[in-house]
Each structure stands twice: as structure tokens, then as C-alpha cells.
Amino acid sequence: MTGIERYGSSGAHTVEGNVAGSKAAKLAKQREKQQQEYEAKRQDIEKTNRRGTRIDANFQSHKDDDESEFKAR
Image (cartoon, rainbow, N blue to C red; front, side, top):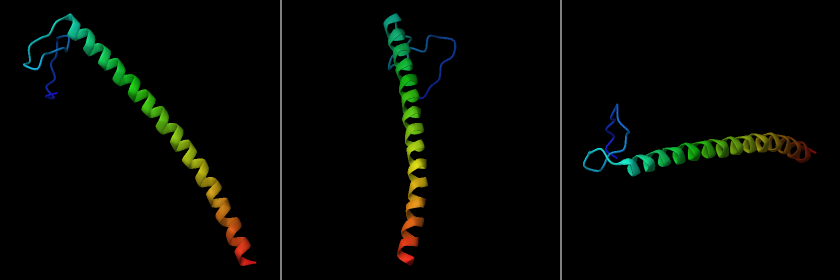
């Protein structure tokens, strides 16, 4: 995409910049919906991964404490 924002139209444009037909508008709306779904899934995966990392960090700190105590004996 060229990065040109157009206001007051359907937002569906051809490569040349001409306003496209109803099928192109339908496809543009479908693509926008897919992008929103993708972002929602991506954020959910990031949230899940952050949660797992935080839990692992808690167990890791206890493991290090126990190991250092065992090695001190």
C-alpha cells in the first residue's frame, strides 16, 4: 500500500488510485475483519506467554534458593 489515507469514501481503491467496485469494497472489509481477528489472537497468545514466563520465573527463583542452600551444606 502507498500509505495514502482517503476520507469520505469506501476506502477501496485500485493500484492506480481509482475508486474500485463493490466487490473490492467487500474484500477490503473482509481483510480489515481478518486483521482485527489476527491482532486479537496475537494479543491473546502474548498474554498467555507472558503469564507462563512469569510463573516460570517464580519457580526458577525458588529452585535457585534451594540449590544454593543444598550446595552450602
